[in-house]
Length: 162
Image (tube, rainbow, N blue to C red; front, side, top):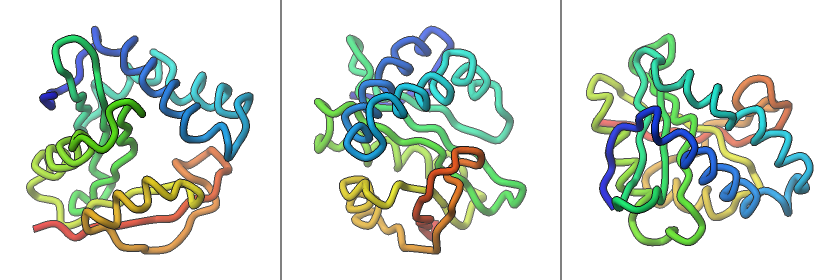
């Protein structure tokens, strides 16, 4: 798979990847009904489309020419030295193949002025936490409102860049 910038034509495939990945990851934590409600909101075509034109951001997909294996979205915060990794998801059938690392590497390369990369992750998502810890992220605290507006608690992890 190669990593490239997402385009509007990718949005249906990105949404499908996110819905399937979220159900595989979070049904056991939140229940399928809640996951469906979250994905219908956060991962709607309109919500994804808005990210394509967001300033100071990078929206990436991992593509093999036939399907998308992963996606990532990151944006600079009000402090341009801090980039927030809003999303990094790899389809369950494509995990443990280096796709997540490739997406993460491209996110880091996309913000050369940044000094740190920050993210929020569900505390029960042990696989994601292990992935991020293996790639240099360290705990920086907790939030009671993951992503702002969800009401879901999360760990805050951060990696120094440069």
